[in-house]
Length: 111
Length: 114
Image (tube, rainbow over the protein chains, first blue to last red):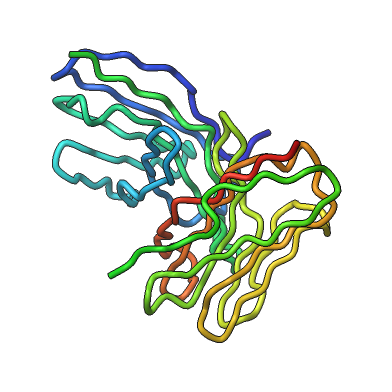
């Protein structure tokens, strides 16, 4: 079983739509959780950390459910510039700060 | 301030050759990690270094090695290159390398093996 699993999409949504991405992780000892964004042929960029209480950054809301080992990202009022691949990322917390990435979910926002 | 810088940006090698990739972390960051990203997949962890010591190693063969220098820059070496080593190699830095510290990625080195 993969460490982190995501629906690869693609998700094609109109501008202004709300879209949600989900991912699950297999290691219950995982301690830190992130969403990264990756544009085509570019490096991953940290979008936001994910906390147990849930957190929001502008149009972006992240949720963590430790009992279900489930992480979500909600994007409201989608913009064309939101088109990218969204990577769900988990850190096991075993000493090394090594990140486990999902395969990513591709989002295209359509005018 | 400069972000994470990697060199070269692109590289073409043939099977059996070796390659050295270089990374300079964000100023003040003491930890460097290396990742391999194959097309269509998420990055996969190779190594983490902190204060010149290896802190973690992913599931990669011994052909892959790395080191960190006193100025916190790092090199990734790959010997006996295989076609399957073709990928984007990403370097990421963090302040102390502690668990949960956000990592910031460089633009990567795109390695093609012919």
